Length: 157
Image (cartoon, rainbow, N blue to C red; front, top):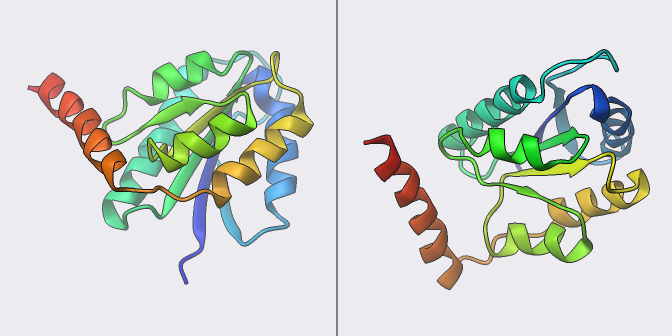
C-alpha cells in the first residue's frame, strides 16, 4: 500500500500551527515534507502556497491521488487563492468538520488551507484527520471535477 505524501507549508502566522500538525501527523502512516516557512519571521504566503501546490501537482501527475497539501496562514484564504493558481490543484479553505470531509468526497480537493486567526489548533488537527480519512466518491462528482479541470485548461489557452 502506498504511503500518503503530505506537503505542508505556512507563512509566519501559520508557523506554530504547522509545528502542531507535523507532530500530530508523525503519529500516523504519512510521509510529511515541510516546505517552510521555518520561523515566525514575516514572509509572503504565496511563496509557500506555490511550493506546496507545485509538489502536490507533480506527485499526483506521476501517481494519481498519492499526495495532498496543507497550508496555513492567518486567514487561510490567501493560501487557497495562491495554491489554486497551480494547474492540477483544487485547494479549499476548511473551517468545519463538514467541509473537511466534503471537499475531499465531492470536490476531490488535494490541498486544504487553514487560518490560524480563525480556527483553533485543536479543531485544525481534527479537520486534518477527517480530510485524510475521507475518499473521493467519484460518480457524478467526477464529472464536476472534470469541468473544473476544463476551466483550467481553457484558461491556459
